Image (cartoon, rainbow, N blue to C red; front, side):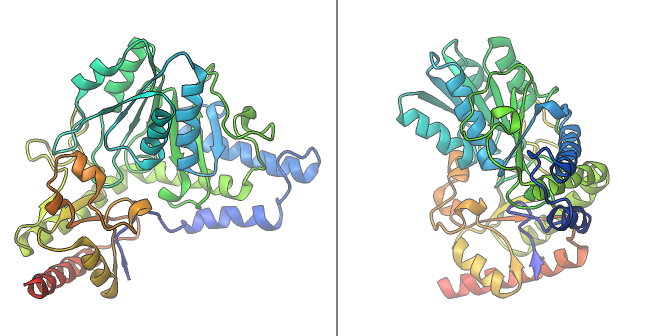
Length: 392
């Protein structure tokens, strides 16, 4: 099997697995208990909190552990909106993950006004539209640091500066960014930031929300005193410990991995574009360096991600055939992989529906090899030829 769906989830790093093992068998106490077993577990949770905080340029006190990125996004969006109930306006981008976009739309259905900031064909955010959207009535602005389907990096630092100048709380969804590009809550001027363990070789079911000190975020899950009373419930101590180790490993490997992953991604793109007539990379801006660092409104990409459309080929048929040939890829967001309609992200970018319907996301990772890239190019090319022939 050639696994090219690292944006959906990653295998647990062996060092992460070994760090978690004692939390199941030895340090299994409830971190909220005052006895020896509980204090031992609590100490491990505290150490993990420091590791997660260090990975994003925060302090341990700022970290609230959750069940994953989706809960963290929900806590941020709903918690920020409830913090200033007199404000009735929300802002987000049109290409947000459903954890943010659907939550914002549900609040809009309950009486809020929602402005979805557009992006262009390359995934560039319209910063002028964002600036115009921020008003004294805006309760929050939520933007993803990097898009999960195309890998486009949004200008969160510039957006955060705008929000700070206008007194608008700013939330960043860094679920896809952490471990792939540098993440820093101070440089981004964010008030809250969500991340998830299983996107960077940690366990599923564990996430975190950075909450800027002094922010009176309104809790959304009640029933316990845990996490500064912002998120009640017994700690997933094993998952939290794994998350901390995964963050430490990811940050230590970031510089070396970036160039390698970009090279693998580019090999795949060049090979597929050369072998499959009509194939196009979505979100690629030929006027910019391949990943030349975000500038205002730019669409630099994550080093590991490519989204390629194969016009005339049905994405679902292509995915099934690739899977039968031993290649795991995705039609876009993993949360929408069962859907057959065109990606809402690509449609929001202005990609024609017939091209969006043939889009496949490939995302490489820590275990991907050059040999797998060569094999993937060959298989994708052969499969596209067969599917074109059958459609004719």
